Length: 372
Image (cartoon, rainbow, N blue to C red; front, side):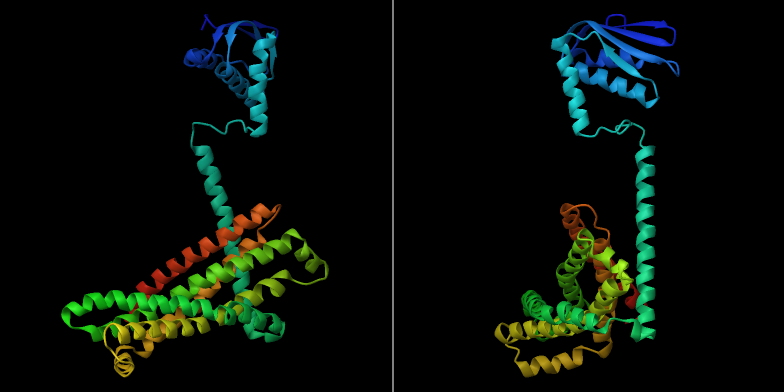
């Protein structure tokens, strides 16, 4: 310590005289020397730097960090006696720290601080989300009981925008999925001469899982992002504040119609998705497996039960609710910039798809338990 630092105490002032080579090769020794200095509360610290022989950015950073540590415990620090050629290094470190908005204690080696902050943030976001979901669910139920409170025209427009206009892309994707599913199963079933059972595999997969799942994922990417982007843009342009000034409730005018509209549209889209998937399977059956349309439909009638169709359709309103709530919630959270709008729109899509898959897993386990 004596080779680099000497302490002088007088009248509430601690003067730290620095000397020697404050360079990269000595960083470990310099850090150890400074860590041994523990000023008394209320002491003012002066760094006397006139005795420094050589100085570089590494030494400047060690010195600057120590001054920040002192300021964290409310001890005022000051640098004195720097040579002009040396001071530029310290000034450079200060400029970099200012640009990065350095937060004292950010690199605290004790993890309990950022763990607590993370848990607190997650808890706060979860409470806000649950509160918003609860309010939306209650408003939807109130609207069903008292239809006069609903904006019927806007609900119909949302059904058209999220459902009718999405039919072509959903049917194309599900048709291709039916083709892929039938073709892959055909390759395996041909080995056992059981080509006809391709109908069972395709039909049950489409009706119970893939039809509603693919439709929901397509809607999440198409309509969920649109909800977040539309409401986020309205937040940025203060249109939502204008609605409040006019005495209108933005949740009832903007959110509830989107939620109800999508809950109506997705079951209808699921029906079209199921039809398209079966057509894809029938196409491969006719072209590859020599299963004509009559044989396909006859086997289909014996392979599929009403419960299989209802299992898939029962998932659609739940998936629609998750997509609509996530998209509108993220849109209402937009504030400050277009960059935030883009980020939350992406978050809305990713979270919607994640929630759809989680919900589908829960449904699968639940239905298997009760024998559906």
